[in-house]
Image 1: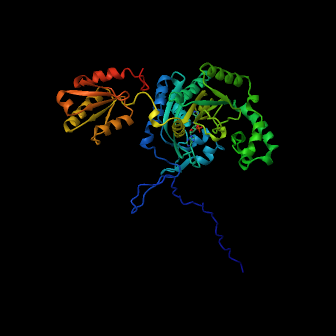
Image 2: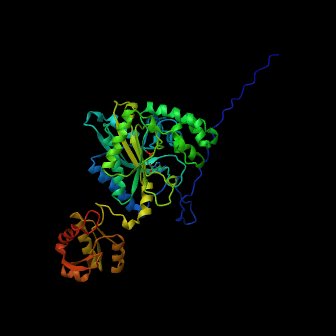
Image 3: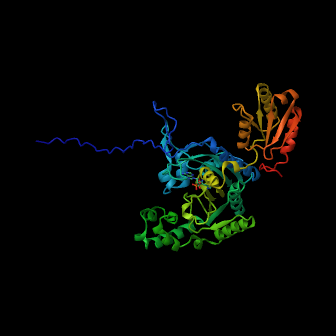
Length: 471
Ligand code: HAM
């Protein structure tokens, strides 16, 4: 009797789909107790009006620098082909292996929310034939990036970057200009920073160095943390990034990449440092700095707040980072084109600035208010509205608060907005065709003709420098 073969049930292991756990990281204070309220997704955050001034200050700093250093604004989509980032950032990096928001769209294209923007800038450079234009092409951007990171202090799943990229010039002066720009971005707002800098050479130099590094670390394998044991096989340069205490003495004794650099790379690095000395940008040579993305060649740098006394370097995370990436344009299908750039994390920058000053002390040019109009009574309110409109049309920035009736309350509001002048309109002023101009700092008041208020105010404001200080 022939035995009928029983069909073998194929055991297909279903991927374990973890149910999304809503995490309450910010206390939800608004519910009425009857209906479900919503929280943010893990690692996401709102930017609240109370922080607007810090965000604006950084935006203006970036915009100002872009104007002075002649970078044109480039806006790229938040969603791009996933392979754009896999190819440029590189397999084996944390960003590609663990942190990309990858999914299929309705046409089964593999797409990703951009984890960074350099790859997109390079894509745009190639796609729009920018190599045909006068080089270098200097571009800047500002916007959200997404990384499925483990949320912790200074680490979000959606965060913002301001970035600057110079494509088409290999001269070390370009590296120095970018570093100067990153430094000024903070200096303009009064936040002291220092640059940590290193050179990781070209791939052939790095390959030789990696061999030496692996050989050195293999001999110490049993003393390493679990992560480093993995890095040893997967991405040996990342061994130098380890923050575990047990690995520090091993790291301190590790061979340094500088010793593996050939003449050209060494010269390039020396020149970058000479330029930085010239413009007096403070830097720290950090031989263990290798960065977490694969596309870098030669110069790499990161920006840190200057440490307070007693603060340990390990406890800080970088405000920003960047470097040269001379091979990326070609790697992404363009002509061989040298390039360099950096990006600054805005959330981390805002946190750092908050440690140095409260919102009132944040000063920046361009959008500070010029005056506040306070009014008393119906007629005055109507006249105030007209005056606001006229002053706005003349280019002045005027605020008001019609929901406060008392003069005291309105002047308090003016004070908290830090306007240099308040304009006061009461019944008497409306009848007389006058208005009171109050210097908010000294409290001195003068009565002027309403028709002349624009002219007088502009004259007074011209005594202010761009930072709102009297000259
Ligand atoms: P990156 O070092 O990966 O470089 O990121 C730059 C900055 O973005 C970091 O220093 C940090 O301030 C901020 N950042 C990164 N990840 C997070 C996160 N999960 N949460 C909050 N902030 C974060 C780049 O992205 C390169 N594209 C820089 C570059 C431009 N290189 C050449 N050109």
